[in-house]
Length: 159
Image 1 (cartoon, rainbow, N blue to C red):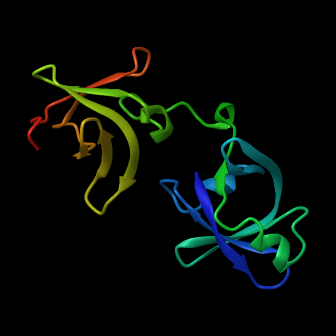
Image 2: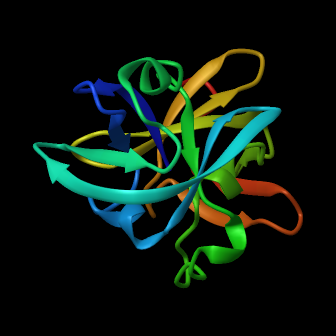
C-alpha cells in the first residue's frame, strides 16, 4: 500500500510514498506492517500528516533518524481483513498479480507480474515468453476470474 522513501528530520519521522487511490488512504489504518517478504514487523501509527504528494508519519518505537533510516525502502502493508471489499469489477492489485493471462485466440500471454499507474490508466506487466505492457481498461480486460486464477484479454499476441 506504500513504501518508506526516507527518514524525515531527526526525531524518527518517515516520508511515505502511498500507493493508495487517495493520498491519505493509509491514514485509515492505525497499525501498519513494514518489511519485505518474508520479514514483516507491525508498527502503531502515532501521528501522520500529508506533505506535498507524500505522507509524513511518526511510528511508535521509531525514536530517531537512525531507526527511521533503517526502515528506508520497506514496503507498507495492512492486513487484508482490514481492507473493505472491492466494488463490482474493481480489484486490489495484489489479487491480480499471478493471474494467468490469455487472449481471445486462447494464446497464453503469461502471468501478471506487477501493475503501475500512469496518468491515463493502470498498466499490467505480463511476463510470458516475453514481457508485455497491457492497459487495465475495460476494452482490453474482458474477464477476471480470481477463483480460477486467470484473465481474458482482447490483445494481439504480436503486440
